[in-house]
Length: 313
Image (cartoon, rainbow, N blue to C red):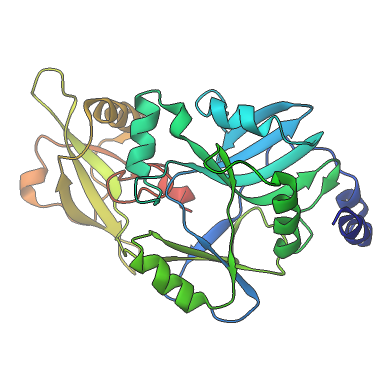
């Protein structure tokens, strides 16, 4: 494999052959579609329900970075420790930190619970791509070659460990999708086998969800008058086909006191004097506060945690 990578790298631009380990690479993001693609040219992976995380390894030191480049190594310490033992000088992996439920399905709620209660030992790093290895930039290589190199790098890791290879099925996209939905999984991610790694959203990576949900944007809130509770309800909306932000209602249950405080703090930083909705029912005009429509409701769209709606995966 290394011989293949050297031959392929030499055929690329000079900067692609021998390259310094990058500090951060923006992740390739998948485009949401209704149906899984068919054909042997596609690789299909299980869609994980966790935090997208890059692993940067240099001389035994590991940094775990979020999709926006934040350093979360301290939060994912057991995963960082395990990654530090890999037989490499430098490497850059793409993957997802998640928690498996008793049924073997990843759960974002379980991930949040583990983080809030300090159960870092429950976290698993699922690696699905390899962008750099020992001085070589692998991003120009086809995905199927990068995954082969990744699988070889991870080797025979112990079952149930904190690092796992995210395997795939080649071809049979619709059958794989149907089976994933039958098992209660969130969906699948289909990737073009011969595609290079592109640090942006592309149509070479596609995601197909089993549970179709309308992604709701937070554009306002109502503060609680109960002692110890900051948030009474979130005011939600969605963008219609014309680009208007349509008011969809409110949600006032399902988030913890801690998450409520965090949401209020973030919304206050982006507060605006009036609503950004195209139309707001009269009963919501009094007693509500408004925010720029930049946050996705954490109770509706959890595949990357609650986040800025301008950077959906």
